[in-house]
Amino acid sequence: MGIRFRSVSFSYPGFGKGFYEALRNITLNIATTGEFIALVGQTGSGKSTLAQHMNALVFPTSGSVEIFGKTITPKRDKKIKYNDLRRKVGLVFQFPEYQLFEETVEKDIMFGPLNFKIPEEKAREMAKTALQLVGLGPQYLTRNPLNLSGGEKKRVSIAGILAMNPDMLVLDEPTSGLDPYGKKAMMDLFRSIRERTDKTIIVITHDMDLVYEYMDRVLVLDNGALVFDGEPDRLFRQTDLENLHLDHPATIKVLRTVSEQLGIALDVYQKDVVGAVRELRKAVRP
Amino acid sequence: MKNIVIGQYLPGTGFFYRLDPRTKIIAVIFLMVAVFLLDTILQVSIAFVAAIVFMILGNISVRRVANGLKPLFVLLIFTFVFQIFFNRAGTLLWQDDLVFSLASISAVVAWTILWRLATRFRRFRGILFILWVAGVYLALAYLPYGPAFAPVSFEIYQKGVEMSVFVVIRLMIVIALSTILTLTTKPTDLTQGLESLMRPLKKIGINSDDFALIISISLRYIPTILDEANKIMLAQASRGADFNEGKLLAKVKQIISLLIPMFIIAFKRSEDLADAMESRNFVPGKPRTRIHELAYGGADLITAVFTVVVFAGAIILKVLP
Image (cartoon, rainbow over all chains, first blue to last red; front, side, top):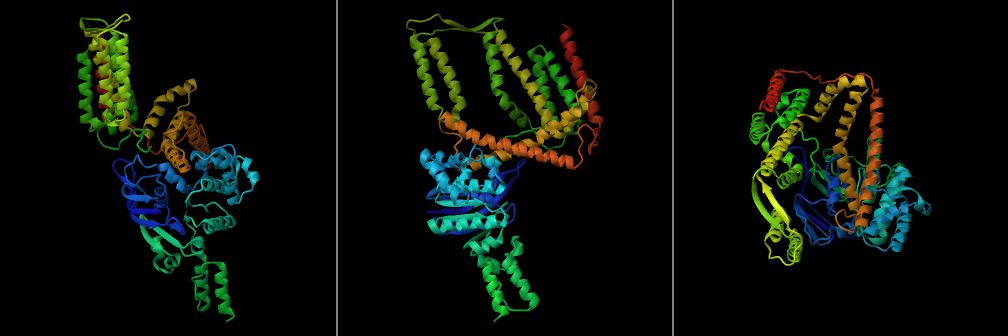
């Protein structure tokens, strides 16, 4: 079960005869439960395209993707109910502007559940719960989603997917455009969803601090190819991060600078601020 | 969604590419008028062959132009059928009595149901449609009649056949001409040409600068908006919106979920564009310079002479007999 990519390539049709190869020969396994995965890579490396393969929104140009036992090939199969897969793997797009359209937040969150034939009363209930999950109070239910601030829109769009109660969650840059506090709250939300339900969550992000602090697996895409698949710790201990167009998390950078400038030996690989402070304290007052 | 070609410009080299857009626009207008002045099948056939020869000489793929005809195929067929049925002059070529009786109408209904079922095989849709038309005709014309209503006489006349061929060829030339224009001229050049040609209209209060700006901005934003539409579609499909299936009411709802974000994004984009233009000191109505100034060359002279000759020839052919 889960999602299996088998040598998947994908090309966007381009101008004239040329085309743009967005994914090159990707093989990858993702379990249904227990994973918290970061998908990183520079802009244009194919992260969003990979995410859109995970709920059969786009079809591979070659290779196949297996989603919950259904095999997605370049050719459309009439026997597969693609909509079913989209309910099982909830995908939140990067820009909430692309999906908010109803008069009230409540109706907008209910759009997904109603499409999947969930009775109206139940859908209303789900909308309420989902909105609470993303940290917005019930007073937002009657607001117009188009008049919200950027961060609030983002939360409502995530609630719209959460309300579908998917078996897996894929989020395209859920923390972009949020203030630092909002970012942390969002990541804590995902962590709590994971702890409560053990569902696999995949997050596209550029924020290495979040990757190091929260995730247990990281996928690195470079120019359409999967160049790293493993634990964040292993990724950041690797020296050629620059070749992958990635940066170190702030904790590593700060501790490394302190260690070099003051000439103290430190274990610089600390996942969060608390760990970094503990390491510094150890060095100052042994 | 991505397959839609807007502004059919295909980069290339060749005679038609070297022409000034103004020359091309005027030449196409005059040649179209000339084609409409022609009277006989022979004349339009010669013009048609000449058009194809010029396309080949100008290094334009004839198949590409034929593709331009595709959307107008229905119009061509409609013209053809209309002419063949309703033009009743010349000698009679074919005559059948179409009888509407209980037997023939029920045969037509059964045949239609069979056809609708068979259209599941999308690949053979064209052939199936022709088979259906033929079947309906045969049923009406030759089926043993029961008690019948008044028969309708189906007649084809010589003049009808001639006119239908004539009209279709003429239409094809006109479409081919405009396709050559759009195929070999960049949308921006086309607007610049139009602007330049419309400049005299300023005296009667039509500002060609504004007009050109409107056209070039719209052209520029078509691919962007299409791209946005595609993204919105994916985002809503991700929430279970299905744009193909479902009842009419559900479908309307799905389309609204597409249209509203579309409008919001389009308005926001246009506001951003206006801000960006103003911050680069764009003042509406002020004279502006251009990077590429239009200039006539030798090819334009040849085209102008050719167009004048063809136009004069068409007038002479019309007036002479």
